[in-house]
Image 1 (tube, rainbow, N blue to C red):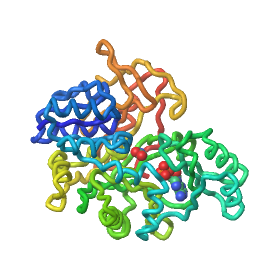
Image 2 (cartoon, protein in one colour):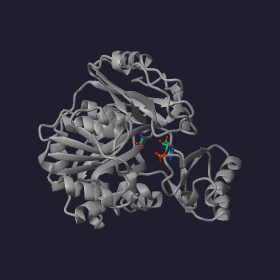
Image 3 (cartoon, rainbow, N blue to C red):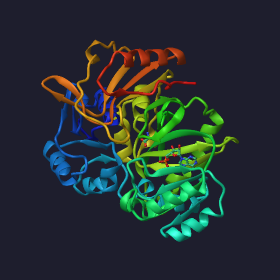
Image 4 (cartoon, rainbow, N blue to C red):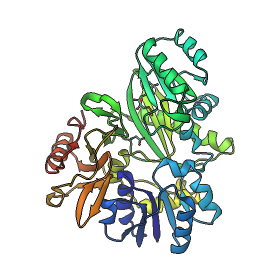
Length: 421
Ligand code: AMP
Ligand code: GLY
């Protein structure tokens, strides 16, 4: 089969790596890919942006692509799945309408309330005065969220009214996140453990991926700014059988059935960002219409089933006929970033040390890298992601950081507390 992967981050490199292990795969194209995908055998990077849907369709038709898998949210939200299907192309992902679940916080919140799925209390605002009066009536901390997409930065946790007023004004006037912040939700702050619960969906059936957690903040001990994710682990060890069952029954099935019932069937990867409160009750704090990055790197490392076969089953509505098998070992991923990320950072540092690494039970996935005359350079905030597997939670961490220490570039930065503790 000829497979096309859309995107160019660490998540997409992990998808490419897993797709290559399928006996069904002949060749993989990645649009646009990165230096890591370019270095894999039987893989070709294609210089088409992940949002250039007409060019992607033309390419897929010309190459007679059998299956397309989409990594990032933007092409999904722009309607890549609808357009590919109209052109008779096989693609695994949600439609434009279904991807509103990530694209609009208000859509997601209203959907959750309609279907009685647990989520923190919230109010929706477009007017500064109304939002500020509301701040007088609530207990802090609170969470303010831009309604639209804001590159993972649109969520702020505020501890007092003064701070909150400033953010409300800056968001609603469009100063902070442009149009995405001109409508906001103000949400109750929940205390608890976060988990990324990702499932494959074919419109009616689901197949859960291994549980995972990511480390969202830039600094050790979960301090500093929110990022796309500085590390991940799988499984989420605190999820016992009872909680797992509750998440499926109280959150995942009602979401998938609710979407189908509203004539908006969900297909593709569904990512429920959950907080499990002190009483062990799961609440949805967000949905993503895609796989997580870097959760995917840890999940793919543990996946033993044929990923291409599963995605085809997802396209054909027969996920109920499939099982999914996982390596029982612990997977841990560490993102190596460039100093300054998630704000301003410098590209084009030469990356050293990669060729000397023993990759037994480990893999280095590329995100922001470029290749020039056989040398590797940084080309993004998140540059590499080291993922490793072990049955021992201590050994997995030791191996991860041993590999990290052998990699170097001038402005390298990573957290030193990623692990199973
Ligand atoms: P989101 O983009 O909605 O996942 O939010 C980013 C981060 O903000 C989450 O990973 C949580 O750490 C935090 N967060 C979002 N909503 C809440 C909430 N209602 N209570 C506590 N923390 C939250
Ligand atoms: N790691 C969080 C995300 O992919 O949204």
